[in-house]
Image (cartoon, rainbow, N blue to C red; front, side):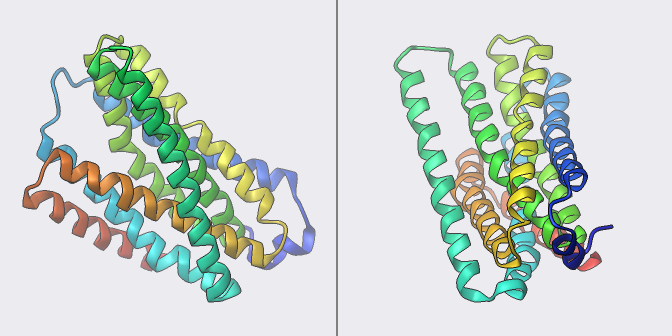
Length: 260
């Protein structure tokens, strides 16, 4: 068990960082892998209402963890100003990554690829890019406290399940074999291990830098929620059930944070 104080007293611990990296890697490939496995057994499209509700549920989970655990932890460590700077940087960086994915989308559209296959490939690129800052959240979270790191690990893994489905199912329906779609889905979770490694290493700089990292992770996750998950959910389905999914996600996220 690693406490916030002993981490800085002993300096950089390679074994400690590798453990965090491994946890981030397992979380990334587990969440997306489960989503890919579900798609493996699905022979037709999941209903729009169900997929939208799952996306909203994961959005609610992430919102609750950011607002009730991640950001308060950063406030406690270094106060308001540094946390707000981190949040702003997180939003900005992920926004840039999001624009990169959209540019790739426009290039793919000019080449006349299969719509379903293109959608799956684009989701895989976006998922891999988003998993990097999410891994960063796990790494910096563990440097703040084990409880926060574990909470983020579980929440992000759950959040990656519907994204794994959204990636693997179009690939399968677009012509990829189920095994190939599943493998690519699992591989898209690998950047989370890299992100966890970076977050853990940078977390050794100072407690103030941990707060900056936590703020960055919070901003990145909030952009994913409000810039990607919720708009995508509403595009898929506009009914009441998706909003219920969001509320349930927030409630479950609060329960998870309170249990820690």
